[in-house]
Length: 558
Image (cartoon, rainbow, N blue to C red; front, side, top):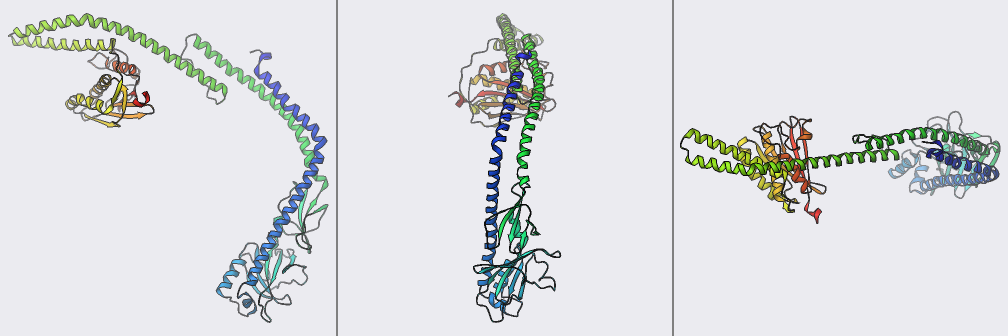
């Protein structure tokens, strides 16, 4: 294959142009327009991130406000908060248990008029003061932010291994004298700061939460802001999500992308050259296999196969080539077989005609001699001669059936009637050989075929099956459907057919029996084919043989 005419070479050039030129052009446009566009996108992205963060934090605080309001207005809550008893009523206790066990809370606290802690309801996440230590909870120095009826106290940063927190307080309804005045949710600070999410600018921006107590990062730790601060919407007075931005890092992704773009273009071009070089070598090898196959077929080697097991287009062509070669081999084998059968048929017909008339005359003569013969010994000899003449007559009839089979008369034939006729004909032989004979399957099948031909086929196959079976064995006639064909199967439990003999059992005059002409299976196959069907023989040595005859279903012909 000339290099200048190679398809691979042309595709290589086109692929290089299609991959490299656009990348270079995009790179030039990238330098010109991308930086400003990139900055605008970053600004929009940061603004959207801050707005979404503010919305999440506001929603979180609003949910805690509603939770605190529910507790404050619940009947009996103020009574429990103002009493000296530590055990609430069943309804109040159940509500406190459910609300305090939320993962975002350490517990529920009740405060008096002077911010003194009156009661404590610990939750599952409770830790540190005022739950499991003698240290009380001091809130006097913490900033307090009021928004309507709700009050945010804190936040308090983590200290001495204790987690950071804030309080969401709400006034109790129907307070008692000297009792608790407010109910507060002891909120885990990290649950609030985690809502700021991840870095929206790939390392160039760090989210922080501005509060009256200072700036807190995503894990709830107090930090000192650095770099440029981009402010988001204010949630409550003094509460505002922000982003710490390093301007030098914002454009770093832009520079990396530009370098990566040109490196990718260079690597892509190298990979394309390597890929197409290997593809060219492989393609030449596989096309060479196709050429070798074509030359082999043209020289008469029809058994040649390429056997490409790939999944690409050339493998598809190779499989199509192998299928073509196989069909061509089968077609030529069928033509050779038909020519052979035609020659054998003509020969058998001529022999049969030459023998039939003299044989009839001999039989008539023997019968006449038998009527006049008084000697018992010679009469027995004449009887034996007449039996042999009948046997030869049957052989002649088989030769005539093989040489010139009667053309079929197709009609709708019920399988039920066919099986009934065949069973009646085979039962005497089955009883004589002590072999079980049965018919199974779908007997309602209707086929298009010559009824006498079908009976002759099944009779031949049934006799073969009975002769191959031992006493106590079984022969089964079975009718089934297979796609658009009806299948009439005859199976036995005999010795089976050796693998080296199986391909030849339908050849004319081939037999493994001590008696017989070897025409039964050949005639059966011939009759099946002229009726639009086919014969399929499967055998396992030592296990038995199954012969399936396929015929068109009646509805397929309509």
